[in-house]
Structures are given as C-alpha cells and as structure tokens.
Amino acid sequence: MRERDGTSLGHLDERTAVLMLHGRSVPVLAGFDLDFKSYSWADALAKAGYDVFMMDLQGSGLSPRPKMDDPRNVNPAQQNLLKPRPPGFTPGPPNYPFQLTNSNSDRDDLNAVVEWIIRERGVKKVAFIGWSAAAFTMGPYAVKNPGKVSSLFLLAPIFPPEGTSNAPDPLPQPGFPTFLSTKEGTWKGWGNEVHCEGQREDEMRDKVWDAIMESDPVGSTWGPVGEGLNRIRNFVRWGWNKTTAVQGGVLGGSVPVLIAYGEYDRQVNTSSEDPEFNFSVPALYNAIAGDHKLMVKLDCAGHSLVWEMQHKNVHNLSKHWLKHLKVDGKTQGIFDMNTNGDISPAP
Image (cartoon, rainbow, N blue to C red; front, side):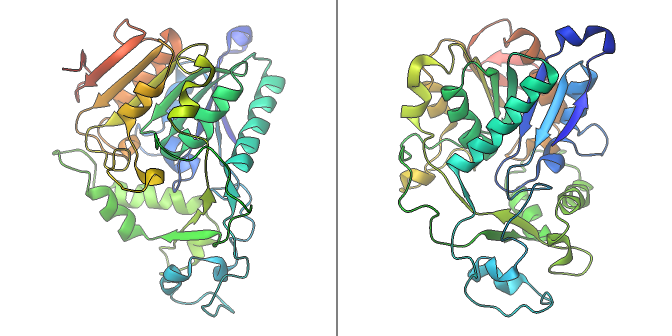
C-alpha cells in the first residue's frame, strides 16, 4: 500500500480518505501513480487535498505473490514465453495446480486495508476509486459494507450482468496461479482501442512497461533480457452481477456511484455467449437501484485511458465527484465528455 497524503496539518479533521484499487493486469502504482508528466492520478488527488491510498491485492504488484515465483506455475500455454529459461526451469504442468485467489480473499484484502485506514486516519468512511476488474471487489464490498464506503467511482468497470452469484466448488479452483503478458503484446492490445490522433503518446510504450516492471521484481528478470514479463494473477470470481448491484438499494443509495468509461473500450462492452464474459457498462448503470448514480462516456478513450489524452479530464472529474458527488450539477443521468473536458447530457 502507498499513501499520498494531501491533507494539510491544520485541517486533519476535514480529511477525506480515498482508496484506489487496480484491475486484472496492471499493478496499482503503474496504473494510478505513474511518475511521468501529469499521469499520476493519485498525485492529482493529493494536490487537491485528499488522503490517497493505493493497494495491490495479493498476487499483484508489490504485495505477496505466493506460488507465482515458480515459473512452472505459469499457464502451460504461455511457458514458451520463458526464454531464456529461468534457472532450473523445465516446462511442464504446474507444481501448484490451482488458481491463486478468489472473490472472498480479494474482499478480505480490501477489508483489511479499509479498516486500517478508518482506524489509523480517524475517518468514518473511505471513498473508493477502482479501475476495470476492481469492480469485482469494490462493488460487492460496498454493497455489503455501506457503513465503511462513502462513494464509489468505477473507471471502465467490468460487469457481467448475468454472471454467477455463487462460489464454485471446490475452492481453490483447479488451474494455475500465473498468466504472463509481454511488452509488445501489451502495447499492441492497447493500440486496438486507439482511434484518435494524439490519443496516446509513443513514449508511453516504455514508461508504462517500465512502471509495471518496477512492481514485479521477479517477472522483470524473466523473458527477454532487459524487458521482462508481466506476471498476472489467476483468480476466480463470483457475486458481481445485476442481482448483486441491486441488493438493499445500497448502490446509488447510501453509496453514490459514478461510472466512467471510454467510447472505444472493447473490454468493458462485449458480446460473448458465455455470461461470465459478457460485459456491459450500461447494464451496470441500469442495474443500480438507487437514484444517486451517474455515467460518463469519454470521447477518444479506450480501456487504458489513465495513460491517454483524457487522463487529466478523468482526474478533474474525480476531484469534482469527491467534493460534490455530482456531475454537471446533477446526481443522476448519463453524460458524454469531449476531449476538452466539456460535459453534456448523452443523446
């Protein structure tokens, strides 16, 4: 966990604690605290006076990664990426033939940090900001713990409206602990959602990857010399769907919700026949029962918009949200945001 405390010593009673959580494949510091130009979202919030915390779940970033240091626990279909081979490694089935974490363990991780912040910083509640797959953890947690969560800002949230509500049996689930991604694959995958001139800077290819590698002391030594591989935890999830989102009227009720996503994001809006991988951002908005809910679609932005031209507008949107819990003076509605940061009601 990292903290950027922007509250002045003379106003500690007024501090607002914000907790930022990463998605599936990008460690929290590379996503929210990139040390390059104006891309650090956490720094922008701290400069606005917020007490900002960032956490990596188990299996991600600088948090413990049990079983992931063993290259044999990499997805067998990706072990060919381990060239040159790590010392002593021979390709084969995983030594730990299970997925690493699950919805229960992730929510327990989150709860431990939330309770620490509340206790150590003397606040009553914590404001949540989550990117991508963070929705799997923060959404259900807020539903079950409304007394600990002041608001929920979900950026590019993954939401399967017809996903399962029940834990699989048995746990842990069979499989393997670790996926891998490459620098080139990450850049090319991101490029599939780049459709506007100036949407991303070419420098980001190195800046983002270097930041990911700084949070992965083992993966950075695997694969191509001087480049490394991104180790991604394999987790099984459940309990985040249209049934969960409506429970108790918490979301949009005692926990106001703002959803933001890029118009070219193809990871959050899919058309899979498998309900577990059929995702929809509008379906999340519609599933939230409470009236205090807003959704903003950002022009010229993809799933990686924290590193794109719209990043400053996202920072400003979140600062306004944390202070006013409104968008364009309203507490409900669907809006568009252009690249200048201008907001207008969606057609």
